[in-house]
Each structure stands twice: as C-alpha cells, then as structure tokens.
Length: 118
Length: 240
Image 1 (cartoon, rainbow over the protein chains, first blue to last red):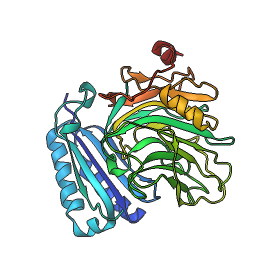
Image 2: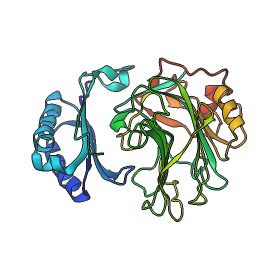
Image 3: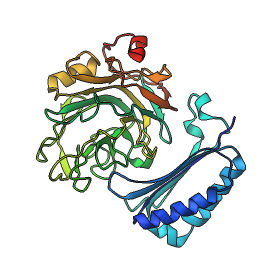
Image 4: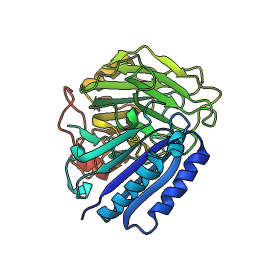
C-alpha cells in the first residue's frame, strides 16, 4: 500500500503565529484521506515554538493538494514567511510504505526555507 | 553492526522507565555511543538521544550547528525550562562521515556542575553556551528517544551503535574500555542498546527491559571499529 508522506517543520517567532498556521493546516487537511496525522506545536531546544505536520496520506493527490497549500500559504506567503525563523518541507517521492523498504534515503526531497535566522 | 537513521523520520522510542529516568541525578550518570553522522541531521541538529519533549524538563544530546559547529552539545533543562544549561565541545570537534565514540558524564545536582564530554575517549574543552540557574528539571515524563526527538523533527542522518547509559560517572579509563569493548562494564549499567540492527524490537541487553520500538531504522551499512562486544543473546535481552 502506498503511503505518500509529507512533513513540514517550522520554527515561529511567536506561539500565536504558530497557532494561526496550525489552524490553517488543520482546515486544509479536512476531507483528505490520511493513514495517520501528526500536527502539533512544541517548544524546541531553544524554547521557540516549533510546528510540525507529519502526514501519511492514502492518496497521492491529497498529498499534493496539501503540499500546494503549504507552498502557497506558508512558504510563498510574504506575511507568514516573515513569522518563520527557519523551516523545511520533506516529501517522500516513492509510493511504497516505508516499513517494507530497507533504505530509501535518496527518495526523500527536502526543501529548506528561511535557513539563515537561527 | 549499527542502525542507520534516514535524516527525515526514523527513531527508536525506548519510552520512560524508572531505570533510565533521572540518569543525571546525584551522583550523576554517563552516556556512551558510537556515531557516524553523514550530515548534521534534520534541522541541522540531529539527535543522538532526546529525552525532552513538550514536558518542561529533561535533556538532549545532539550535533550542534548553532554553537561551535559542528560540535557535540548536551542540554539539560533547569528552573522549569526557563534557564537551561547547554554545553558544547569545540568548533569542528565532530567530524562528518567518520566513526567516532562520544561520551558525556554529568551530575545535575548543582547548577554549577558542568558535564565532561569525550570524543574518542579524549576529554574535550567545553564551552558553556547556556548557563543553568537554580535546580535541574526532572526528565521522568519524557521518553528516551534514540536518533530523533519525539516530534520527529531532529532525525539523525547516519549510523549509531553501542549506546550505553550508566547511573554513575565513569572514569576516563572506563570510557576507553567501553569504547573498545561495549557492554564490558556492567556496574550501574542502566541500559545497553547495541543497535545490532536485525531485530524487530531494539533490545536492552542489560535485561532491564528498556526495549525500543522502531520507526523505520534499519541495519546500518557501516560498523564502528570496536574490538569486541559483551552482550547476552538477543532473545534473552528482548524477552527478559
């Protein structure tokens, strides 16, 4: 069974901004067919609010729809982008379930954005 | 033998149990592991161990690229997560794409204590990058996670092998011994995860049952240059 994966990690300037984006992501996920979902905010090692969305979708089209939402509304949105200290999106390019594959590190594409401001 | 972590999602969750909680409470504790970092890991802060999540407490041990990059960093929460202690080895003291043995000893009973950090059994010069205040926070509510944090945002990229945890501070000579002969010092050995990479559950070879649930991680393709390993059979460890 294929499980197209998508992960977004973003470190925010304030908890309120992180919660705003979290609410947007939760809305974007409504109606999508997902195997499992992790959407949370935690305090990272520098005590900054860090949002993580990690989803295994059941369909590739849903994964692509959410990835497009992230690109449009977070990565390329000037206001939201300005809230983010650093972040990255990772998506697995294969269509297998990772549990059945020995090592597929070469098949995950990671896009960093806002790397500079640590 | 080793386990490889893919830099994006792998981890081993050993949960929290009394034997591996409060490792650094008086009289202190020791962490040892062999590491082979391919890169600095996810978020450029790849975890060797993380025992600190949303709970305001705990500690983590990781590659640092914020201070002295790349260095070995140990961070312990203090004062309700408000004044944490953070210590780093020197700039470029960690080397990518190379096996190195890392160890840290620490007694958290006083904020003025500093850890002793070893790379290949040599004592490292430490920089206090965050000064702790007041009292150390408990770690007992946080899961012991190997190769990541529980949020899966700091995945190790590369291999880890022969992780040991002691409820006492090992001497430098003992660090040397555990480096070449993992598992050979058993006094106060709280947990020993050889990370052989071939079982469905990561066994604790002390028999203390601190088993790790695997997410993704598989047998590594590289092996650290040890001289021998002291471990009972895996069946005993997993079942016992």
